[in-house]
Amino acid sequence: MQKVIVNGDATVAYSKSLNALMVPSKGATSPVLTDTNAEAQGDIYQWGVDNILPQRIIRDSRRNTIIPSTLSWKAEVLYSGGIQFGFAEYDKGGEKLVPAMPGTFPEIDAFLYTPSTRRYLRQSSKAYYWFKNIFPEVILSKDRKKIVSLSSQRPEFCRYQRGKNGPESVLIDGNWVDGHLSKGKDTTTVPLINPYDSPVEQLQQGKGHRGSGYKYIYPISDPSPGTAFYQEAEWHSVIHSGWLEVANEIPKFKKALFENQITIKYLIEVATWWWNWKYPGFDAFGTDKKKELISQEHQRFEDFMSGSSNSGKSLMMTINSNPEFNREFSGWKITPIDNKIKDGIYIEDSQEASSHLMYALSVDPVLRGFTPGGQMNNSGSDKRVAWNNHLMMTKPHQDDILEVLEFIRDYNGWDRNLKFWFKNYHQATLDVAKEPQQQAS
Image (cartoon, rainbow, N blue to C red; front, top):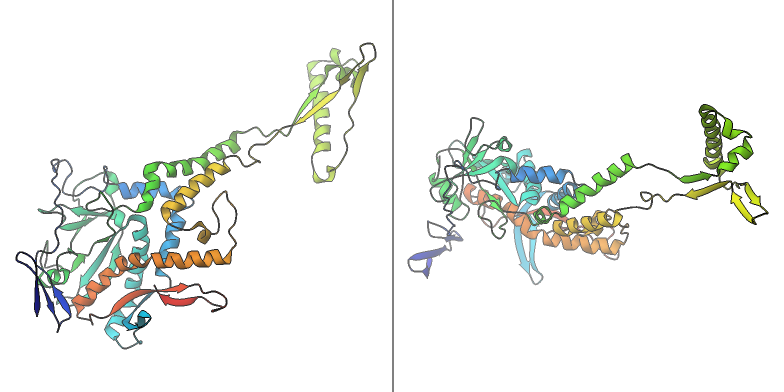
């Protein structure tokens, strides 16, 4: 055992035999928030000013055609070919992850490839991109010597319970939208594991709130500036900035235009003299007779101008001339009326709003095929480069989601050199391969 003094009496020890670092029992420093209005806010740390920020994000985003599908796409790309585990090998080319042969570690195979673990990986990937907060729940065996199951609690149903020095448990409830700020009859309490304070030792010694239980939450998040317990995903900026509202209002406005516009193709002006010329004595006719004749002429015009069979026909108009004054008076005047809806009104606004959404979601539009209001992106090279760049940028996200598996590895006593990763596929150029290449990201 080799010891290193870090600061005063804080000691970090490294054990060669265990290949492990021994850290101070109190772990890393965490901020303590002093709340002067604790009674009014109940026994929870609110998520947003009204405690239903996740619910509002879901509600507003579901009205949008880009956000839900893009977040699902990012989660599917991250999960890709599923989970793998094995060891790292090193050579002149650097690190290479080599999958373990099937059957070499039957206990790990049985744990990783169960439906519950696969479901955790899929659900947590999606929740991670929606909120950057995930709540993995681990379940112990009856003798507490092994973690036997892993699942993912939905973030919108989770709230941190107040403790003396910060959160001590997670309250799981599907009714936060009703505005309650304390534990109710439908609330389930699950103790927390502090990832910064020797989590394996915590669980082994049964420390913390309800330490003798069998279910625990191992919280994972990607820290964002200005937040303490509930982190914010970067794309939430489109909500705060108002661009999501703009993007959602455009289709509503266009729908209202379609429903309320008067669709007129031609404006027809008929001189008063024409009716007397066509129907002698027209001025002396009764109102009903005049309406009948006008309707007949209008229908003849409709029949003549509409329909594919009438395409290309010529139109003959009568003009009344007056030699005395050297003037001509048109009988009918026909003026086409522009249709602004047909011309693509608000397409530029829709395209601008969509661009802001795609920037915030950190996805190259070429990977989604096109931007609404824009044109198709058909370059295979652009897609290949964008795809590979996107996969490389997901490595920190994979590390976050798979962190709980490393915790389970250490608690269950599996080989500490084992590594976990998602099986991703990188696009190769046609001179290298005809099919996508499988690589560990």
